Length: 440
Image 1 (spheres, rainbow, N blue to C red):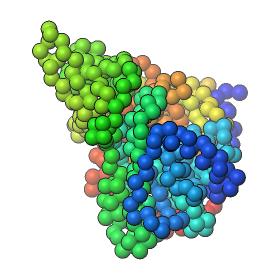
Image 2 (cartoon, one colour):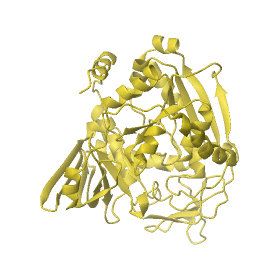
Image 3 (cartoon, one colour):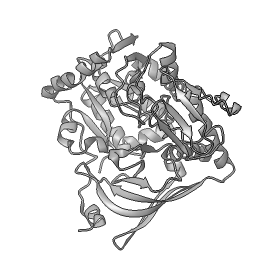
Image 4 (cartoon, rainbow, N blue to C red):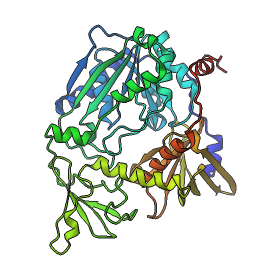
C-alpha cells in the first residue's frame, strides 16, 4: 500500500471526543514525574493575588521547553487540570494523554470544537484548563505572537484568568539545543482577572492585560539574575534562529560550534558569554570585527523580522523549495508521502506534488494562519514546518540549504499582519453564536 493510500484509509484522530477529567490514579504519577525535576532546577514560584483561588479557572502559560508541563503541574498542586496538547504529543500514547487530561489540537487551525471542549472542562467538570497559546517553544527566549482571539475567548468563558509566566526554562533547554543545562528556574503565578473583573472588562483591555502578562525575555532575565551557563557547547544550534548575518546581510550561511556563532560568507564570528550575551571575536587583521552588531540575541532575531517585513511590504517575499512530506492523521505514527514543492509567497502557502501517481494540493492563505509551527532537526530528520487541516497534519522538510524555517515562521506572522490591516475580526457575539452551535 502506498503512503497516500495509507493516508486516505487512515482513521482520523477523534477531535470531538469529550475531554476526560484527569484520572485520580494518574495524579500521583504526574507528581512523581514532575517534582524531582523541578526540585533539581531549584524552582521558585512567586504567587500574586492567588489567595483563595480555586478551580475552575483558565490558566495561560508561556512556552519554553518540555519542563513547562512539569512546572505547571507543580504550580497547580494539588489540583488537576486538562491540557491542550498538539497532536504529535499524543504520538503512540493517546490513551495515556487522554486519561491524564490531554485535549488534542492541530496547531494554527481555526478549531471551534476546541472551545466547546474547553467549556466542558470549565463549566461542566469545574476543573482547570491549561493553555499554551504561543503554540510552540520560544525560538529566542522572547514572547511569540499571540492571537487576538485570546481575549475574546477569555471573555466568553467567564471564569477567572490566571497567568503562569516561567523563567529559565528556555535557558535550560533552548529549542535549538535541547541539552539540559541544569540552571535554576522561576515561575510567576498571577491572577489576572476574577470572574467579576472579567465581566466588566472590554475585550481589547483583556488582550492588553494578557499580552503584558506574557512578556518575557530569557536573556535579559539571565543577565539581570547572573545565571551562569558555562556549558562549552552553549552556542551550538544558535544559527537556526539567527540565520542572517547582520554584518554582511547574507542569509543561510550562518554556522555555530561550541561557544561561537559565525558567518561563512564574511568570516565574522561572535562568542556567546556565560551570561548569554554575544561579543564579536576580535581579529587583529580586521578592524571591522571590533563591532558587535547585536550583543542581545533577541535584538538580532527582531532585526531579521524587519528584513522579512521589508520584503513583504515591497511585495517581493517568495520562497519555493522541494520538500519531503509526511502526514500525521492520528496518534499511530507518521506516514511518508514523498516529495512535493512547497511555495510560500505573498498569498500564503501551497504544497503541491504527485504522490504515487495521485495529485496533491494543500493551500493555506496568509489570512488563515497568524503564525506557524516549526521544528529544528525534528527526530533527526531535519528542520521542518507543519501545516494542518482539521483532519490532517503535514510535516514538511525542505531540502537543500537555501532556506530557513525560522524565516518562514517570521514571514507567516508578518504576512498575516500585512493582510489584516483594516480587517474586521469576529465580534464577541459572533464568536459566541458559533461556539454555542449544536454539535454534529
